[in-house]
Length: 452
Length: 89
Image 1: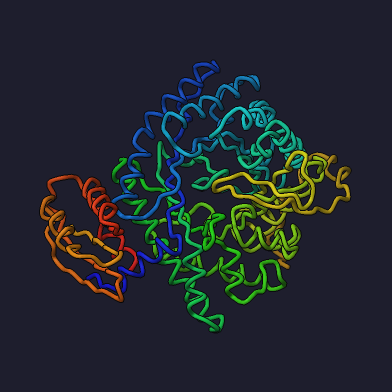
Image 2: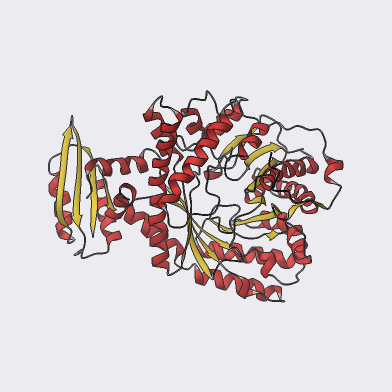
């Protein structure tokens, strides 16, 4: 039976604490679109996506209206294009990217993910063709997101692929220099990539998935931050309990929306991703959760411990609220998309080294970090190699999404607008890892006994 | 199935009448009402049965929202499932 307090709490979570569903993402298999003709392939994928996801946006809008819960994004994730495309030239893959973009435009969705490759152990000719055209694909499309998996705990790290990533990111930054190098915000490099992540830029439809699937990503850092603030100075056990209870409530909304969307679209329910996804809006920040726990600023010593506690409690609370949990499921720490992180970087409290340490205990990795435009490609490769190693050694997902903003130096602010937010350019260690990166080959998979 | 209608805003004459009339016009049966006026701030929570709506639920949500805007109030209509999802195991 409903009571007034519960109703008011729910409404306050939505109106004042920015509780929302960050995304409904439909995964669509494109394996049956394979063709040795690039034009036919482009037409096949356009047709399949626009037919399968025809009602995605209207369904999302109806659920949003009926339950009074904002659903910020409706997205599509597809099979990594390098797996279903034929033996095309790079230009052939560019046509496929444009077909994805046109399909996204036709559907009215916010992003489409999957223009990528899984190259954690080696690269096929198709992978190489696709990778070589990623910068152009990001520059010449609006909605297409790209991701590349360069390592797994079982396979080790494909350093040949890592060595390519620096150039891809630099070129994407250059080609989109008139838009603050925004191309790089649509590209992410992974280790241990999950195959059912609904969040961009890393969403794709895994090869073990069915024909189509609906997954939901929740949000709600503001709700957690408020709950912690209300609780005052309690001990860590109580703090963890508060986060668990709040995460449970947030995830229940995600489960409800996922269930409804699945039923109405006639597409199986995949997973709910428990991630606390921030936005640049005031009151929607993961950094502010950590600060409400008692840190003067996010980035202070103690931040990694606070984040580890948060991440663990979010999972414990969320798991019970949903029948299937997956994706990235943790706390996101994208700098430009989080008002508290932006402030912490601006005032010098948060460095890239601290961010790297934080990624060892939370979901994903170095995310939406603006670095100087003149950063050499091999330094970017070094950043990626470090971050990917954390994921590989710890059997977790990590990722890198950095933006070397063309023409910008440390301290200058880059504004992407919307959910992508804004951020000051962060300082890097500029000592060169060039010789290390140029060695080529693979870093062997780590041993998982003799743990220390 | 039921929905929760919340009405908030500056107190004025005839708020309950307007909301109730809109419910009756569209086949929503009022099951419960809780209402309070604090200072001159009006707040009402209404539970309505929506099984016999003569329009779609999304249209009903829009009608209520428009009614609120015209009267200088915030009227939000939400399916009861979201509250039970959050607050019951």
